[in-house]
Length: 112
Image (cartoon, rainbow, N blue to C red):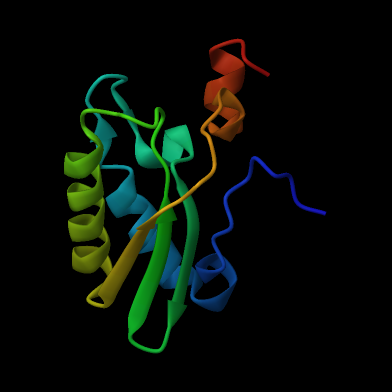
């Protein structure tokens, strides 16, 4: 069973090459308060493609993040540019915890 803190990027198995491009694009979108990108923080919880549409679920580090709308817009643009697909970006309901961070970064911060 997969860890609940790990994101569910189904696209990694369905289209590995596209997955690499998407990850590269998402690593360029940073949380302006923390200075870390979306992948490092584990904010993109789900990523899958269906026909000509890319479905993504994103969370924020805090429910009322003042940069939330800006981050959502930058994320949608990054995914559209990297994939050339229609992007449906939804706000997830998970509450972010430091366990969602990439393992190497969380360990560096002394969180795991």
